[in-house]
Length: 334
Image (cartoon, rainbow, N blue to C red):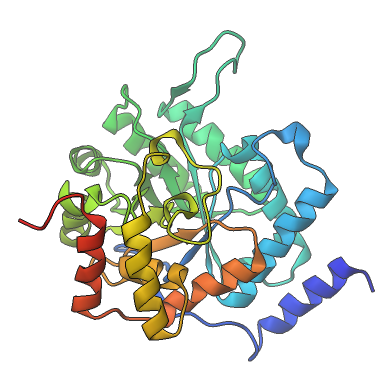
């Protein structure tokens, strides 16, 4: 039996009593229930360049996804821009190979970012036109090999967004059975409120960068709005590109200046006292917040994927939480 067959068989068996288990929670004001940690699929093609994707890189991505399934992750996060759709394609192949997997998970994906020179001469831009939203959704459905996307999100705010036009596209996709629920990503509270006023359905999630190295959502109204409106905050880069974990990986320009030495020292001290890892404590710190933050774990290393899952069983005390906050702030609490 091939290595690939053994992996797939292990996952099928894992759906029984030996499967990893996480606590679950509803996503926003919806009936979607998923693990309190999400697995981010942005790296499963092994590159941002589709021409660099080969069988070995796909196999590594497959191992990562199956490790997440075995560890108990049931929320899988995508975007059509990830390796120009190849990550969705890789995931779709896994869904086709593993019997019953689709029924056990929640699939989230995003649209709205358009690459430069598509078509020729076009700039990098955002596009929330109804035509583009609907066409993007249909392409994601094909790549993922599913009939319905559980959670469809707008990736980054389009300066030209028309809330009424977006609402119409959402209504169309829901009536056609192509999307169950909708959300946004990287939206400011005022933008969320503007779009929600036009939509007949609740926006159930807002995916934003949140970590000990990026505290703005705690102070700019994002998490306050999530609590007030029943929106689930999903935290991308919850380990600050790896700076709060086992090392930096593919940092964004905005993350290169993050200074995490003091935070890491405090994370290590609490991790040692708790008998766990720095990664688990950093994720548990987010999950302690009453807004119900869902960290998105993006590693493709099966060992790190499993280690991150340990955060699900940790509840930090108020004193531990504030020790980390104080270590993270550039200035003392007022």
